[in-house]
Length: 247
Image (cartoon, rainbow, N blue to C red; front, side, top):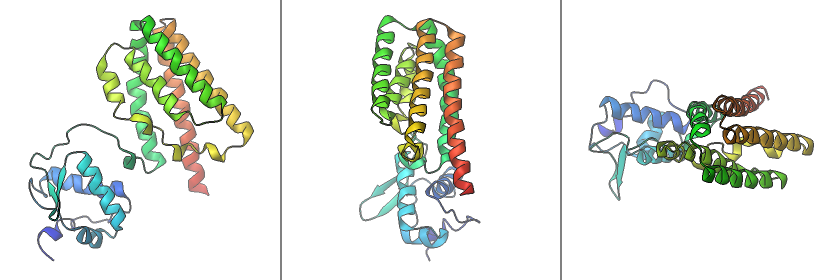
């Protein structure tokens, strides 16, 4: 085993998930154990050192590459970037491998959107209200037709951030995209027809409450409505997590 193949053997508890391996390699890069320009161990060496599959290794390396921490050279392997500082904050699909990770994203969104809803109520223009109404109508239609409405939901929430008149909010939101609530965790396909109807009715009611508060320039009501909506979404995911643990 070469010196570079030993680089990942310092972990005391082999990760069993892609996120765990990505976190471990990130920590080694940030600590300087893996230095700028250094070639990473081979996929096989990482597999042997950590006990994970080749697929997990490749997904972890893809995550580091997306964050700008490593680069790859054809035929030579992966190398630590010369400036191994994450280029920008991002959330990519592979980051959301469990309900706990989805809940962390919801927690972050709550902090951002709580403030944004208040600002939108104070600053919204007629064009913002028209845009929000259009997005809300599209969401209503998707739910009425029995769909997930994930993209329409994302578009409505983004229109709130646009209404803050602060482009940094919408730019931050764009790092989430429509993966902020991945379909594989929504589990709507597990619901009965009656449960899906109740879910759709709740979604429409909560989104309309947010829109009404912003339209009425009611800052406090807008904050309460967005917080209530996201809190209830988080509660549902917690129920799904607990149910999967007990099953």
